[in-house]
Image 1 (cartoon, rainbow, N blue to C red):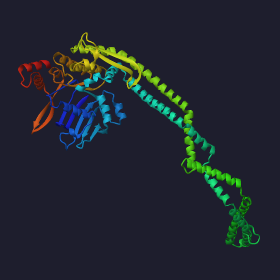
Image 2 (cartoon, rainbow, N blue to C red):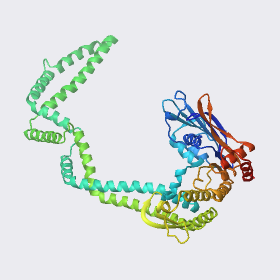
Image 3 (cartoon, helix red, strand yellow):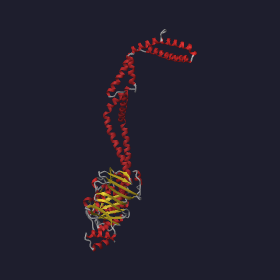
Image 4 (cartoon, rainbow, N blue to C red):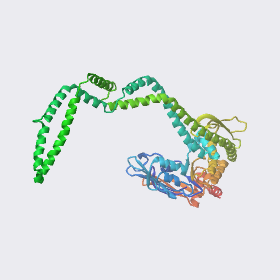
Length: 550
């Protein structure tokens, strides 16, 4: 429940703090005194958007705090999910800066307006005069029925299923569109893929071919130099092998005389062994160097194929061609396997649809059971509010279309007078009748919801006399289960509250400010007497006020 509201520098309010209690609280005041300002400030706490035009003093920031006692409403999980500190006395604060920017805090932790709005929906219901128009809104009518039917858990499960169904349906549609496009390009892609596949390229093939061609194109020079190197190596008189053998022999003869000589011998021996190996390899290479015209032609053809395909696909390497080949393979496979993929996706869509269809049917059945109960409750309450001839007719039809709250279509008709035809609510009911119907709806919902607080902003518009007395009694009954705060112009309703607050304007040094105070017993008698008879309070009005209060 709302326990405290603190407002600083907002509209006509400089600084104001009010403590609220449980049961039924009344707020009264002259037209223009600032009751709407209070609701506007509370709206900011509940997550409505703001700008600097709401500041009383443009150079100072506006601070609005609402304190809520939430121990009995199982909100711990919400705080945990949004990484907020759970406090039994939770404080929501909004700050509007002179530049128009605003900040929101829950128990001193910065938060977003979205989180604030989600929390406020669990804390308080502010019923403004224009909200009676929601009675004609089908989604609001469903909310009433589903509250009685206890459908909300099923609807949440249905919504999750519907989200998955829509996602899978979109994926299925995308697959079908892609299949059409892929089929149009299939033949061309298949030709390109088979062309690359037939080429059977290897990752480093181009470099190897280019090296082989370089060797074949310079075969004569290679043979000449290898022959000369072989001659230099194996010449019996001046060949390197003979010379190294001679040096090795000389050093071997003196190796035993000194470690230095021994080291030199070992080193030249190592050189000789290495050179012998090199010389033999030169000899082998020289013997095997042959010119193969057919090999040269084949390599040139292969390299030209590589160049042609690289140019065709606007790439520079075989690696790029292999990447393109893989992509083409995927595109070709998509067409070849698309029917199977689409069939699998269709099965997934069908499976999810079957599950949400079962949920939707269950929701429909519970709604069917709840509607007669709702009609009976509405007509009973309204009969007590002077609308004893009012009758309701709900037409509920289970359809094949998926809506956000099920698969049902709902149509509400009302007859306000005995023997009158049924018609649409907005065309049949007057403003006063709509107010009474809305109060009846809220009274019924209070039995089924765990909402801590409801605020009525002049829901008594268009009613008076005995009807207003009955409306007040309904609000009193609602306040047994929840905190009810009512803004009213009617003394019959004002007299029913456990607490009574007055909103008024005050002129301080030519500065008009809005104030609010809780009335004492005596002040309350005067306020109700003034509501009965005007500014000039008579003894009769005082006595009448006392009677109403008693």
